Image (cartoon, rainbow, N blue to C red):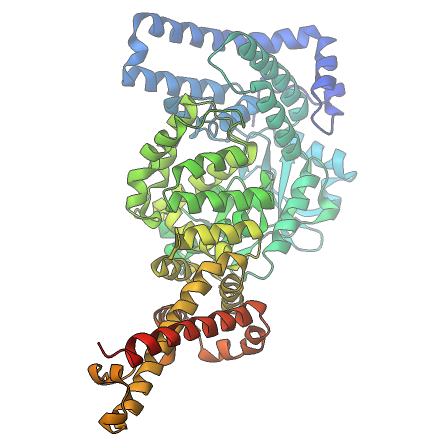
Length: 624
């Protein structure tokens, strides 16, 4: 296999090779002292970029760019150009594909299709890298190692081999000179970004900050020790899930540029015939993948940001294997809580509060005027939410939202860009199996579970917002929320019941407790009145109080516990899979110890006393 002609020779740019983390200042010092290297690469990159921009400028001046076909053609040409310029430009294009605040929608769509695949490099260079990094001959470490790679990407290629201990392994080897080429390209791209920020007024976002974020991530990806740690952390977080497989890392054969992991035999999730051929249901695999991805995002906050088909394998034993942990990201607890709050406001059509959520999540600065953004949100989400969250078209909504973000002063936080990339990729895989799949419908049970089960005070307030319409408790919303939560995998029913009771006796549940007390007062008053009538009717007529003579007995009384709130709550709980009345009985000691329960008892006694006085005067002592 011929080496890439654009690839720097092994040993070149030794200064850049020594950089273990992204440092813009150090990179500038390196290339400022070697202008010949810089000019050679500038010629390779800026000439094609300049020619492309001249063509776009001509189309702009002649008005051709306004036609959709020409605009789409230019967008595709831009994506192809980026792919031809090498790994750093490919990574930059992929980063921009998740930034609707910077990139117009048509170009966004084309960049989203950028592939991270490049031809492999000479196997002799791969073997030399292994021996240099591991400090031993290949045959001293491996029983056997295939010289030809089984796959290649922008950062490296993978060889299949067998360790001396007999374990079949996948060995990822980094491209020779990659760190040097990446640093040079990042230096060029960063300077282009700085020029654009200074000279193009239409660009609101800090492009230099975007490139710096990209640089940090690419350097993390180039450090295979980091990827090994990610894989082991991911495996630990999902150790209790028997449907998820993660390859074991062999540290004795792993270095910064060489990663040796367990070989996992499986088929790509999108190859439906092959998945069925190993006796596995593709729909079931998609369910496992969606469930795991949402658990990563909403529960662990540590997620696989590159779940493309090549990184997800269906195994014959029914497990789903995750591969390639170079691109991982974290979502803070505050951000996860903020995302759930935003979903609550979306479901409740509270677009004004939704716009404030975008401020708290870091999409908008605090001094931005939200007034024109609220109707834009209503236009994007209004019609979609009428169909219900479970039927919302995620791609269509995100496309429309991209237009809003491009028109208004949004700045997309890095974590959100990776979440969108992850979800869009996941939805694409799922749609290849089930054309009717809706990612938001699949995600809503997880939002519901967090909302119902998490004791976080912010989420407790969000739960109140979801369940109350003013002072009126909406039982249908509680029913929908609990029903949705019960659809999620690994439902903790005991925990869910505890949170329902915690909500009832929390400050946020005060209105619900008042409704419950009022309903009990009404029912107990009715029962006491019927008992009074029965006793009074048995007295001789001359001894009956004058007010009793005009009232009739009801044919049958209703049970005390059949009051509307209790009946509705019991109906909701009984519909849950695995619910048993004993679960509530076991919680009686806790209920008895609740201070709010005693307060409810005082309110109940007060309400009954007040009604009794009114009954005595109005219905017993007064004749007409």
